Amino acid sequence: MNPSTSGWIEKFLKDPDYDQQISKWSIDELYSNLRKTGFIYGTSMETLISNKSDIVYSEEEKTKINLFTALKVTYYDTIENANEEDCIKALVQFYNFLDTKKSFFSFINVLPSNNSEKLEKIIHTRIQTNESIFKKNFSHLLTNALLFIDVLAFDYFLIHDKNPFEYAAKLEETLTNTVFLALKSKEEQDDHDELLVKLFASSVRYTDISNEEDASFDYIELDPYTDEIEKRYILDLTSMAVWNDKKLDKREQTFMSALGAELEIPESVVHESVNLVQDFINKHKEHISYFNYSHPALHFYQQTSRTVSVLILRNKKRLIKEISESKDLMILLGQSTIRDLSKEEKKQVKQQLLDICKTIPSLAIFILPGGSLLLPLLVKFIPQLLPSAFNENK
Image (cartoon, rainbow, N blue to C red):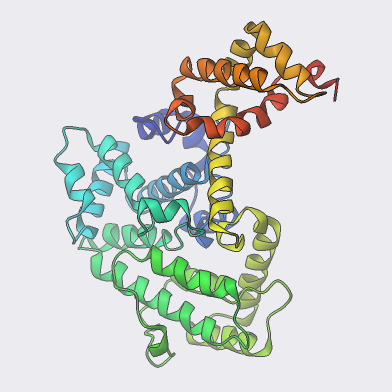
């Protein structure tokens, strides 16, 4: 199953291994598992279901899988005698309600496709931030911090059988105001805090971004949220906002205790939320985009490198075969490990690698205008793909 190709949802639904892993989950179990993967914090480091294929998923693909899995579990946990066809139909209807601006979701509905294909396009559109394509290439904010709102709103839609837009908009406003208030509670703010504000600003879908200067516990309405999952979600996102690589200062601790009291959550649960965020970020900090504050050009290179890495790993068998059959290329690559190649030899390597990329559709990125600039990245990964004997001269 490849979440970047058409038909992935139907493959997902037909795989008995996936169904067996998630069929008995409750909403509570779902939330705990989503928190472990990082989905709740806006960065999916892994998928809810174990990946038994050779495909290495990108963060975007992991997010797609986790969002659809969460929505599916919510449907089956809420609706008696649930079936897959009704689940997909309900999801398309649900997102139509949320699309009050009549944007791309509406365009999807007029396309001649079945509900599964429509939902694939909706999910792909939904996980994008509000930034333009150009800005995304030079941005640290490639995650979506508020996707779990969709899951809670879908649950609301199923239980009450009414338009979920007002619920989703109010929850989004409450979350952003609470996070901004938490950031204001800090004694000192740093680049991470500024980026976090931008992250939430780029993630809102159902409201306009609120002015954080107006936020206060008197201004924020927390009383409507009585469900434990709603409370834990507000608490967890706020814990992420006050994250500190050392420890929380007194003002942050006081704020989190006050928030717990407002939500009527025991102090032990507040401490658990803070500790889980600390553990997750400390474990994955190097891979979380909004913590890697760098020059835009360096960030663009790092993003491109990750993309190329995924493409190469997915096509490694075909690459190994094609490179092995090109004797001249093998010789030059082997010699490059012990000496600098001449200008002509480098040109020959470049041309032969581009010829190989032409035979593998997924690697078309290398033969596009400017794609040859990515060849050093391809060469960087080649030693990892070829037999160990290839590296014995190093």
